[in-house]
Length: 290
Figure 1: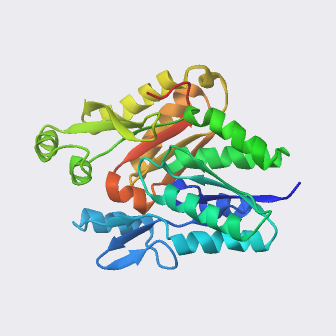
Figure 2 (figure 1 turned 45 degrees about the horizontal axis):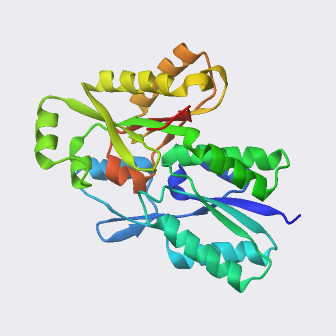
């Protein structure tokens, strides 16, 4: 049995120490600010990125670079390794398609090398949790094929609930109308969203005020978890430079579920460009997606 490596893209929002420890290959997604492209050798800290957005700068995002994808896969092929790649949702980015193309080309050029690409149909740590499960199964001795089969059968149980603080970033991305953004901001409406079965972001309702929106996504998480509430699976809280709000959600989760198995991380810039500063999300195992 050939050895294999697990790879993902930078939108998985895994903690850097975990990526390093588990030797996960990361393919970057990119964003542009003031004519500078970030995401590979050049990058901003999350604080720097979100402060620029607060200052009025509007980043644009780009999917993974085909040349970088080929280079990454070829590097592993040269080491005699197969690859299991878990990608950001194909419903939200062209990155998955780019990776599929690169995997096919490198496999054809290197007979005997297997590169399996799985669409997580997820975002941020929702994707990251799929990667973490793949790593866990690999450490248990499962083959690449067994892991891929498990993920395909269970990936819709990786769920995401989140809320954003500023409707204008959703309006800029075409998810709400300009009038909705204006009116919603005036009356302090906070939208809540989920990732659905197709891997797309869809509205799950609104709440009046920030604290209410944070509490509501925890309520919604509890309902969606179903039988998984009885298991001590990791729960991930992600935020767009809103650590205090993320910590409030962690407090609620610990009080309600009596667990300390919670990870907190910032939302990567190529996702945060669309969700904006102040976005907060929960990624968890649940019974169903809409």
